[in-house]
Length: 159
Image 1 (cartoon, rainbow, N blue to C red):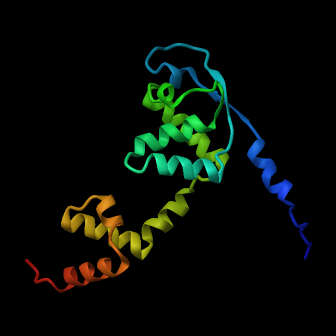
Image 2 (image 1 turned 30 degrees about the vertical axis):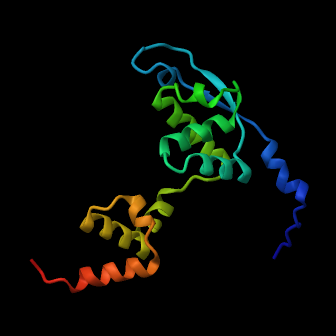
Image 3 (image 1 turned 45 degrees about the vertical axis):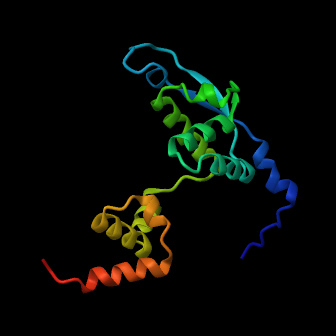
């Protein structure tokens, strides 16, 4: 078996300084326009510091989360949060997909399927469906509360 070299701190930090050119097709820039000729943007991977900042700032809004992630990753052109928030949704989703990919935070369909099959995810889905709770309300439950509500569902008389 081949022995692998131990990475240094510099090796680990080197990836955070990389930038990636991402081609943005004209159909994403101007959907329905029939225009040709897209362009490129420069993106950098998000760091742990970026994700901490973004998650603190966007606690109440998933759409703000996407906006902040794209804004933090855009190197060229550099844009303010206000500017990114005025971009078309399709363009932000396109850029966010690439930000996630280059940051190493994408999930494969197999990983998503496995997560959906996890007992806790299935329990959260069942509670949301049965009680009409939002995902945020279910996420606020402790494990003990989840177990108690599942037991109550199991024991309730059939209608």
